[in-house]
Length: 260
Image (cartoon, rainbow, N blue to C red):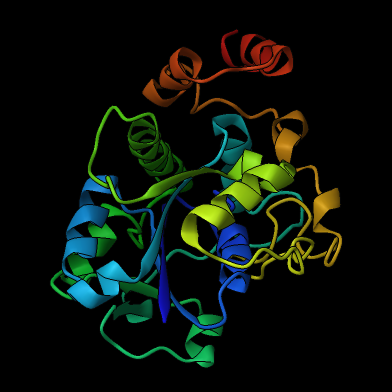
């Protein structure tokens, strides 16, 4: 039985990737190290049984910063749909990884943490129940930066993890097929247009494009967004500019909304 393990920060499209990768194998488990810094994910991964480590598909997922920031900010503030601010993980929603999971648990939106970590400590690090939207966005940017540095080989906490660009995975069939070949799956696109329910579906579209997921504007979410205040002059933005290939449209957006 394969165990699919993904490290990514919230709104990175990793649940979309998880669903498709899962469809390439007949039977599998899933571990979601969401909002873990790569250094913390390394500790959690190394505590798994050796047999599970040896039979796992390990993915580090990173989304383009502008698209991620727009989607995460919309989710945190609950904008566009007049919905309440997205729920923050509370201590009663935390379970340890060794505990059994059920379909009911998944629907309840539980978060699973390392067995040796106190629930209170986990909340302090990633999902403080009293965190303001501004604090949550700043914590999210830090998580993105940590993952980006691992993605670009500046750090090497997760040498056994394949690096997956959400943007390339979404748009490029050859990119998906190459990943499938690397991990020994059987390629299918039967779930390519499914909009995953995790996190309340899409930040922008919710489930309005269910079964038409490839029609979503996920590669240019930044064009639907203008509140770049917290991203301005951030370390994450500077790292993004210095280390990623940006097209003219993204550079114009940075100069217009963020740098000004």
